[in-house]
Amino acid sequence: MYTQSIIESTIVKTPGEPEFHQALTEVLSSLAPIIDNDPIYKESGILDMLIAPERIIQFRIPWQDDTGRICVNTGWRVQYNSALGPYKGGIRFHPSVNQSILKFLGFEQTFKNALTGLPIGGGKGGADFDPKGRSDAEIMRFCQSLMTELYKYIGADEDVPAGDIGVGAREVGYMYGQYKRITGLVEGVFTGKGLSYGGSLGRTQATGYGLLYLLDEMLTHAGNWLDKGSGKYGKLVSISGSGNVAIYAAEKAIQMGCVVACMSDSGGYINDPAPDGIDLNVIKEIKLKRRGRIKDYLQYRPGAFYNEGGRIWQHPCEIALPCATQNELTADDAKSLIHYGCQAVAEGANMPCTNEAIKILQANNVLYAPGKAANAGGVAVSALEMSQNSQRQRWTFEEVDAKLKSIMSNIFSQMSQAAEEHGMKGNYVAGANIAGFKRVAEAMLAHGAV
Image 1 (cartoon, helix red, strand yellow):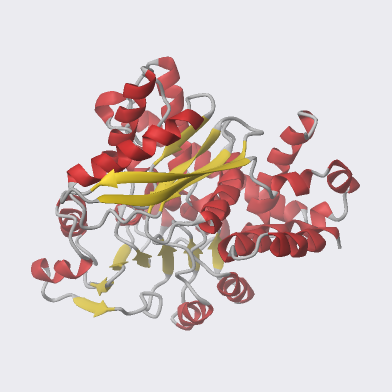
Image 2: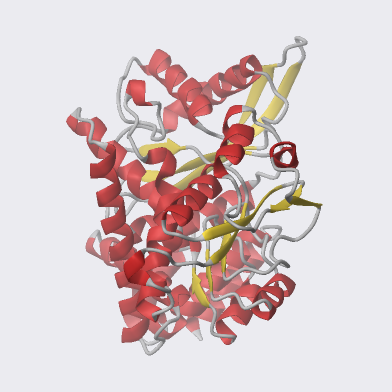
C-alpha cells in the first residue's frame, strides 16, 4: 500500500535515525486507512512533503568553561512544518540530543500543535550539551553562544522556541537576552519567559495541568472516575520524572483527590503510598529549589522507600503518567502495569511508550492517551503567551487556566470523534493522528501544497 511504501522508503533514505523511524511508523500506520483510500494525498504528494522537515539548521556552539577551556557542542533547529503558522517547539539540552531525536520531536510537534486549534506550526531544537553540574556562568555563556548563531533563523512571526528537557526559565532568559542584544528587538520570540519580561502566568504548570485535564476527560468519557461528585477520585498514581511536568501533574492529581505514590528521576524512584502519598512540598524543595536528587526525599520522609535503578512501572498503580523521556515504558513495563490493574496511561513526555508497549496496553483495554494530545498543554499556553505578547497584555492565572482546560477538552473531543468516525472508537492514538494530520494536510492543500 502507498503509506507502507512511504514508511519503508523513508527508513532507507534516513539511516541511523531510529527515533524518527519509530515516530514515523506509529503515526503513518494509524493514518494508512485514511491516506490509502483518498487519492488526493498521493496525487498531491502531501505525505512525501509532510514527513520531510522544511529545513534543518545545524551549527557549532563554542563556549568557555570556568577553567578557561574552550568547549564545542553541536546545535540544531528542525523547522518541520509551517502550514498552520510560525514554527513552534522547544529547545532541549541533553547529551543524547541528535538529529534523529529532534526530527521525531518536530514531526510529533507538528501534529500536537495542530490539535490545539491554534495558529502554530511545528519545530524543535537542541544541543548535545549537558547542563548538569555546570555553573550559572557556564550555562549563560553556552546559551549566549548558541543564540549568536540561532538568532538568524527565529522571530516572533517565523520560529518561536521554548524550553524543553534541560532548558527552563533560566536558560530561556539567557537566550532571549542575547537575542535582544543582537537584534535590538523586544518581541515574543521565546515562550516560557520570566513573568518580569513577557512570560505568561500558568506556563510553568501548563503541561502537567493539561495532562490531568485530558486524563479527566478520557476517564470521565469511559466512566472510570470514582465518586465524581465528591471530587475524591481515590486513584493510585505513578508519575515518572520529577521535573516541571511531573511535579505539576502530581499537584493537579492531588487536587483532584488522587494519591500520588511514586515519582522518579534518572537514578531511581521513590514510593510513599500511605496514607496520603508523596509529600509534594518536599519534592518541590528538592527539585525546584535545591536541584537535588529524588533519593534525597528520604531525608525528609525516612519511612518512604527508594529503589535505585528500579523500574517505576513495575509497581502497583491505577494510573500511569510517564513524564520523563522517550521509550521509558517498554513492553515488559506495560505487562507489569496490566498485572497490577492499571486502568489508564497518559503521556506527559514525548513518545515515552514504545510502539510495542502501546499495542499491549490497547490490546488489554487500558485507556491510553498519546503525548501529542495529552502533553499539548505546554505548547497551548505557549501560544497563549504569544497572543499576550502581541497584544501587550497579561492575563490572570485563572484566565489562562480556563483557556487551557477548554483547549484540552477540545483536543479530547477531536481525537475521540476522529477515532469513532473512522471505526476505531476508543483508539486515541489513531484519533489524535487523524485529527492532527487532517488539519495540517488541509492547510497545505489550500496553500497549493508546494
